[in-house]
Amino acid sequence: MAAVSLSVSTVTPLGDRVFVKVAEAEEKTAGGIILPDNAKEKPQVGEIVAVGPGKRNDDGSRQAPEVKIGDKVLYSKYAGTDIKLGNDDYVLLSEKDILAVVA
Image (cartoon, rainbow, N blue to C red; front, side):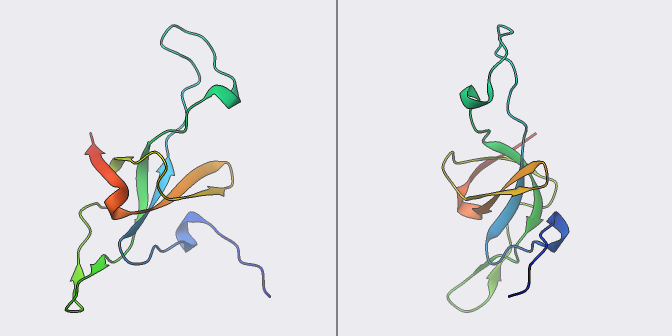
């Protein structure tokens, strides 16, 4: 079996899935306490870097995704598949797991 080299440019989500670059976890609390790695919460915010073609309807047509590349989104805490590429964390989500687009 040949090895596959993954990078952001080689990942194309299928169906209604989106590929999201996870935002960096907070290093400090609001009070200024530095958090160790095991105390940091997994961020639920990220930027969309790739979008699938959309959900297929019963009649075979595609429903265009509501989000686009570059959107910053808030997603469900336990949703998707975590992927690490280089030093960056990504998550592959179904569009239905996106809760909101944030400004």
